[in-house]
Image 1: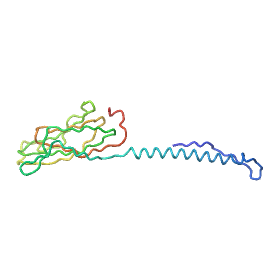
Image 2: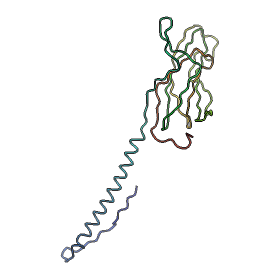
Image 3: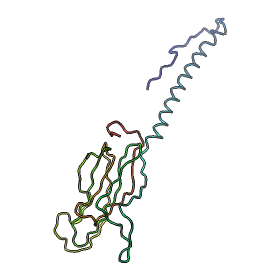
Image 4: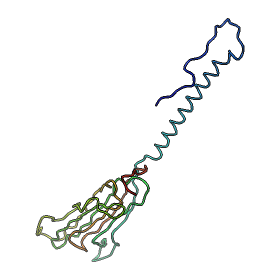
Length: 195
């Protein structure tokens, strides 16, 4: 940052020379003008720094969203499973990450595949389905039933993403989804995000 001061040189006088008060005060006035210009430049810079500090933070917010209700069955609680679940960002900043748990009910040697995909603000696909979590994904039997595992994943928001969709690829009733936190950069989105 360059600062241009009003006066690059100051008037001087010889000490024993008789001079008027105007001549005497001129260098003082020039120094004061330089001080004021420097103060204005520093104040402007401080305003910019304060603005960046207050608006450029990266913040994670707990959401606590669940794809299904908590139900009581056979002496314990279960999260009700669902085929699909989605999260649509409604904030005004740059979304960065969504932290998600894929809860799998692998009873009966189930082949489970939890997937995610990314959509823009009009529902267009940015990235098609990818595997995020799986039980016995390559097999035809794992030799035992009742493998119930939770897979935690941090899914990025690709540029332009408005919605992240989750799905149980094979079933309607064996996977539940929990969305824990949203991480966002608290700055304005640029045009490439599209919304």
